[in-house]
Amino acid sequence: MRTQVAIIGAGPAGLLLGQLLSRAGIDNVILERRSLDYVLSRIRAGVLEQGMVDLLHEAGVSDRLEREGLVHDGFSLAYHGALHRIDLKGLTGGRTVTVYGQTEVTRDLVEARHALDRPTIYEAQDVALHDIDGTSPRLTFTKDGKAHELTCDFIAGCDGYHGISRASLPETALQIFERVYPFGWLGLLVDRPPASHELVYAGHERGFALCSMRSAERSRYYIQVPLEERVEDWSDEAFFDELRQRLPAEVAEAVVTGPSIEKSIAPLRSFVAEPLRFGRLFLAGDAAHIVPPTGAKGLNLAASDVRYLFDALREHYRDHSDAGLDSYSARALARVWKAERFSWWMTNLLHRFPERDGFDGRIQETEFAYLTQSRAACTALAENYVGLPY
Ligand code: RFL
Ligand code: PHB
Image 1 (tube, rainbow, N blue to C red):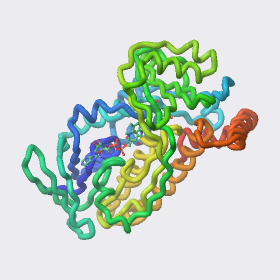
Image 2 (image 1 turned 90 degrees about the vertical axis):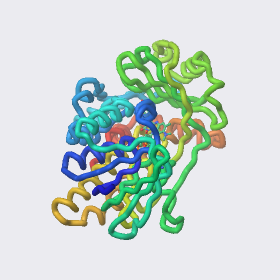
Image 3 (image 1 turned 120 degrees about the vertical axis):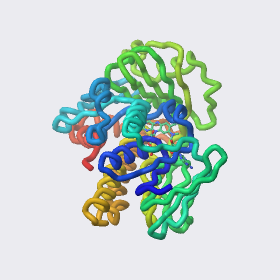
Image 4 (image 1 turned 30 degrees about the vertical axis):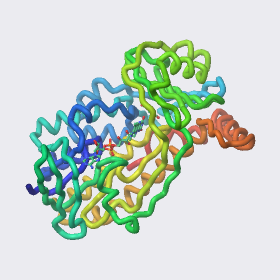
């Protein structure tokens, strides 16, 4: 088998890159380790920046998003019971975010790929990368017990944090920057109307809590939990009890409980591997970087990487210029690091850190007080939350 761009991973990064390439007439094949059902059932992020919405539009996959996505003009921060609204639209000259689940983005991209009849090989096992330094890199894999080989011009490593692309590189080729946080988020999805029509991010002495949503009838809630916690030990009642204790009274009273349809724990991590290019392999999305979910940036960063990588590949094939490929890593990383900084900052603002002392606590309180009193501070928060320009 031969293609122009071999994409590893059918998450949002791989599917979006595939869609943009296919529409530009650039041949591509996606290899995915999991089954289609598994890919479509993953519950993850929910907030899209305008830049990502625009890119989905350019990729021709925004019809349902435009119908069903909820445009949010602002969100609230709560701290020890006090609520403070961040007017995203007012503070950023009219910019907003759109609440639309990653699961839906993935479904739209899978359907669009199917409509274009482009190949995705699901349940591709033992994917291995070869000759990434040469002009004709190859991937080998097995499918249904049979060995296959895929030759290509370029490999896009869109296979997430636990993928094979980054792991195939010699350790000396990479510089790793990492921060592991001593807690995770326990998330719960429920078919009940959200507690508030906008998101509420709450800092509390019992720990962080977040009220989010997927639609007017489906809510997504998160609470900070210690890393050792097991999801089996959290009944829905215990979850809602803890959630309410961390929210301001008016929000807590509006939480409508119900049986969970999904419940899982995600650890929090900041991570960047540099650079994003090795010969003919390009890393994009979670394969190269992770942010804690507090700033709602993980999915959006996958989209901005894909924006830069797609432009670079199109330039290569259409304009016969490699300038974009040569600058891909530096361009993408410049934006990645700004989102890393913001996500780290917002995580620090709102979480309870077990090892922290009184000084740290006062600094956190003061950071929140400053936000409630300074339009400049809120503007800095808002411009990062809606997404810095590509
Ligand atoms: P993905 O979505 O992880 O997709 C990677 C795909 O690659 C496949 N794969 C392989 N395929 C072939 N061969 C191999 N050896 C392979 N190894 C892996 C995987 O099966 C998968 O299909 O990465 P991508 O496309 O870069 O997209 C990034 C986003 O998914 C991610 O940034 C966000 O979802 C992060 N994230 C969240 N971000 C938010 O902004 N808000 C959230 O609430 C939020 N919650 C989450 C999250 C990530 C989580 N992870 C990674 C476990 C919750 C979780 C649990
Ligand atoms: C979500 O709805 O899953 C969500 C929203 C905002 C975040 C993180 C997750 O910051």
